[in-house]
Length: 185
Image (cartoon, rainbow, N blue to C red):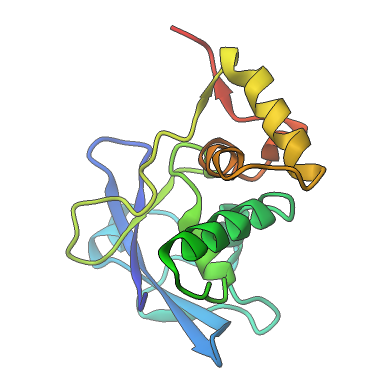
């Protein structure tokens, strides 16, 4: 994917903040850049200290491939293997070789419902959010989540376990420590 539009999803309708562009080298995320939308510049705020509110394209610091706001919205080291396993199993089922997963792919793979912060993303010109799946477990599902997580950590997870964990556990915070959940209605 060449670029994504970034929105603040804290209000309805969501507000366009700007465009995030990855830069790859040999299939590996080498850097990224961000450009605030001109309308957002007039009344918005900087997303993180390394993304000051200013016009023009801003490049991520040399020491990071993603800006702080996007790194914070990405899955942590426990969630990344779940996303990787889900993609590998999907590729196997489709009879194709799994591709390399970059930090950019991880960021885009997290459900909007469980992603840290209020950022949402979509392809330019699209009306569909990239990760609009439900992704939030009901409190009554905790035994199922914990059982699937235990099987995953013991390398005994089924395809169903991985798909389920990929839907409800891929957020900063992870099901291993504190599942993203909501009260049953």
